[in-house]
Length: 209
Image 1 (tube, rainbow, N blue to C red):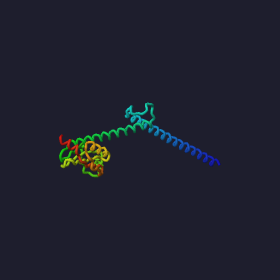
Image 2: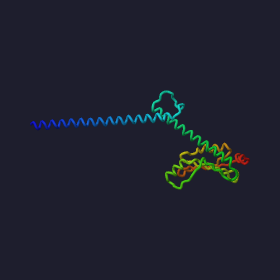
Image 3: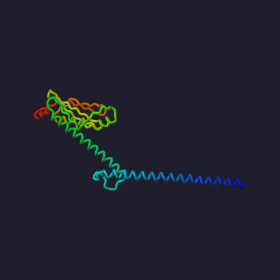
């Protein structure tokens, strides 16, 4: 009987030790998870503060203390506004190049006015070629035909920064061109626009340049 009682006591003690060990291990894991989550939140807060510091103060719609979410919303709105401004300036530059080509070309030649230096890669399908096509500046080419009244405008842009075709047509019409037709096609990462028009007032103007 004494042997059985001693064995039972030992088993009970061992059980208590195992239970205490498991409880301690579970508690340590919980503490570790809380610490990881605390550091993650601190890191995110630090990133949000850095992002907010990049946004000009005059852009904020509220001068009061802002929450982290409202700061992120303001930063997102500011980034969107900057992108729209960049696209607007890109369109204005392209329109200016278009006018320069129209007024600078005479007779039956053509004027090609790329927005920057472009290169061609023979590695079709490669990531380098895709990145180059996406980043390639737009090209504006104006062709005056020998009959003196026909004008062909060819525009080439990346799919990331397409032209606003209606704005280009408006510029041509304001300069005295009569639009015959306008179309575009997509090839790979580039968009090709072609505008055919008749020119009367513009041709008379450029003939005196």
